[in-house]
Image 1 (cartoon, helix red, strand yellow):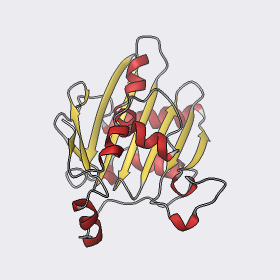
Image 2 (cartoon, helix red, strand yellow):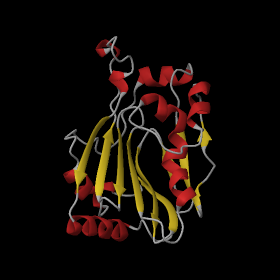
Image 3 (cartoon, one colour):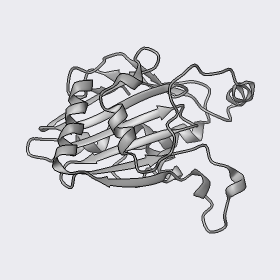
Length: 220
């Protein structure tokens, strides 16, 4: 079950809406659709025999600090990357009030060999094997969550630090190396005590949650 701790209620209600497409680089779209997007509801809805393969990998480098969204289109062999940062209200502009919280985006055209190698890395890491049933993926931590449709079969799984050394996952280094945004990766490590964050959490100004891998997808 997705466990929600002290929360900003409106944000979590929005985050529970079903995702069927849209720009996840937009902060409002993320707020409305985050759980559904990570779960791959849109991928599952169209995954059947004969449909193109589709791969989504989400790196959570502490939810409110960095998110890295990787989408691999098997038809065009295009890797789309979106990376978020905390944002700074001091950077607000009248032209785009949400600008400081928009993700930085980039795309990479892969040749046939690079595409095949990347899908091979997905397989080596376990994307297409049995899911890690029961594994928790906490927002205030480091984890990968993956949703995919391959050969007409939908799968969802994930890995979390420190249970897993995320640096050793076969796809991690190739994805980071191909990332055109050139934004430094928030590497896994101990999370320092942050009194200011803890105070905001107690006051309901920020939210924390945990996703959970199930036998047939993300547990709701």
